[in-house]
Structure formats: structure tokens, C-alpha cells
Amino acid sequence: MTAALVYRAEEVTEYDDLATARAAEGTTWVHAAGADRAEMERVADAFGIHPLSVEDVFNGVRPKTEEYDDYTLVVVKRATLRGGETTFDEEIRDVPVGVFVGSDWLVTLSPGPADPIDRVRRAVRSGDERLLHRGADFTAYRVLDVVVDEYFALLDEIEDDIEAVEEAVTTATDIETLEAINSVRRELLSFRKLAWPTREAVGVLARGDPAQIDEETEKYFRDVYDHLVQLVDLTETYRDLASGARDIYLNTLSQSTNEVMKVLTVVATIFIPLTFVVGVYGMNFGDSPYNMPELAWPYAYPAVMIGMLLVALVMLSYFRGQDYI
Image 1 (cartoon, rainbow, N blue to C red):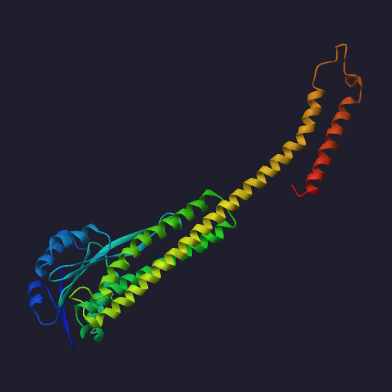
Image 2: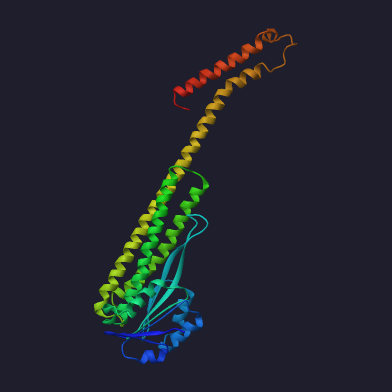
């Protein structure tokens, strides 16, 4: 059963009954994390929240801000890296969070865990004066702020992956390195798809468009908006770094291939005259009128072998002098 916090200056009260909490004097905050659809609908009924708004949160729609007559809905997403079997086998896992801001009430709904929001809730319980002396819009700001702060931690993890990839491309050109580069690029693309619409959603609050946002609170939302702008810029920078790492990998792979081809070409070139010699003396003309006199010479075989060896050594020495090998 979801409980409600009702707070005002110097006083915080917790209610189990949502209707009683809604009617109490002060700011009412209901936070349902890990709730199923039935529990979210129960909370929505108590505060007159439209069923489609609950559906948006439960289905995890794209981050957005939507204004209604009695409240404003802000859908954002928590983001964490979910690890795999290897360091680079990771993907971004997002959990939708719905923030419903009324004139004197706040409802936060999430079908998954919302640990950062629990920290804000504990701050209310402990009597944080900044929260108790302000309205629901300021608490909504704090909720969005802690969600966005998680983005910085996630981007720091991706940055570590990029640094590891940049070190790997200079020493290895195996398929695992390419997979690591592609994994980082996928993470950055997923994060960009998350941060970009979140910035637009918070931008609506920063402009003070919704009636539930007090003019004094707009500057706090602008601060969150600035953080999201910084995150988007960092994402673009990291994407450029990941693309650069991929280019370095491809250039290193191409150079390695060229070195192999150069060696193979030298080997083939050395064997061309040797193949010619053995081809000539491999002809069976011993009994013909135009026989090959060398076939009857007792030292023909060792002479040919020594001659072929000398040709190979001379050509090898030449190629080394030209830095071909």
C-alpha cells in the first residue's frame, strides 16, 4: 500500500489513506516505485489523474511534458548501464518515471525501482527546510535533478569504456576490439535518444509554461535544463571520440593488411626466377635431337641449387635495402 507524505513548514505527516492525505493542509506527495498497474491506477484515482497519463508512464513513452487542467505530467527515465559477460557487453537500461505536479500535491509513479527519488523522500521526512518551505513544484525539481544526476554517472562509465577502447585500438586489431567500439557507439546512441527529449521536456518547465510552476522555481528548472544541454554536448563529443577510435582501428587494420601483402609480394617476387629455372630444367628434352647439355653434366643439380640460392639471397638483400621487408 502506497503511503502519502503531507508536509508544510516544520511539520511532516505520513498518511496511509490517500483521500485523507489529499484533503490535509500542506503539500501532499505520493511516491509509488515498483508499482503495478492496479496500484498506479489507485493513486491516479485519488488525485484525479487521467488514465492515459498513467498509461504513458506504465508503457515508458518518450520523455515529455504534457499539461492538463489540474496538473502537469513530466515523463522522464532513469538510466543505468546493465553489464554483460564482458566489460563492453553492456546496454543502457531505462526505467520510466512519471512526475505529476498539482497546485499543492505531487505524485511520482514508476513501474521500476526509483532509488534516487527515495533520497529526496527521505530528505522530506528528515525535515529539509528547503523542501518543507516550498511547494510541490520545488519537490518536482529535486526529483528531476536527482534523475539527471544519474545521467552524469552513466556518462562517466561510458567515458571509461571509450578510454579502454582507445587503448585497445593501438595494440590490437582483433574482432573483440571492433565489437567493443560498436558497443560504445550503441550506448552513446541510446543515451542521446534519452537525453535529447528529456532536455526538451525540462525546457517546458524552465520557461514556466505550466500553471503549476511558480515563477521563483523556474530558475531551478533552468539549472536542470543547463545540465541536460551539457550532457547532450558531452554525448556528441564522446560520439566523435568513438568514431575516431573506429577510424584508427580501420586504419590500423588496413596498415596491418598492407604489411602482410607486402611480405607476400616480396616472397612471390623472389620465387618468380626460381620457378622459371626449375620450369626450364623440368622439361624432358634429354632424348631429343636438341637435347639440353646441362642434363648430362654431373654437377648440374648442385649448380642449379646454388644458383637459385644465390638469386634468392641477392633479391632478398635488395628488398631489405629498399625497406620493403
